[in-house]
Image (tube, rainbow, N blue to C red; front, side):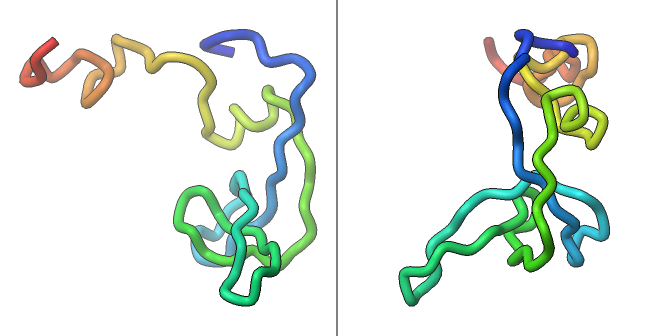
Length: 85
């Protein structure tokens, strides 16, 4: 892991048809007041079964804990040189 050690948390994941991959999900409330799951990447509705995974598995899916790696460049990484500090 790159950032702080997350040891006891579990995160809800499911397959997103729009992203065509397993993604982290969140709970949203629809217009009728009912809870529904959505993809954190594209906001699409998730209809499949959830799988609860630990932090290590979530990082293998491409999610990251902690501050961005400053050597990675781009926004937030300090690599482009165009942002003021």
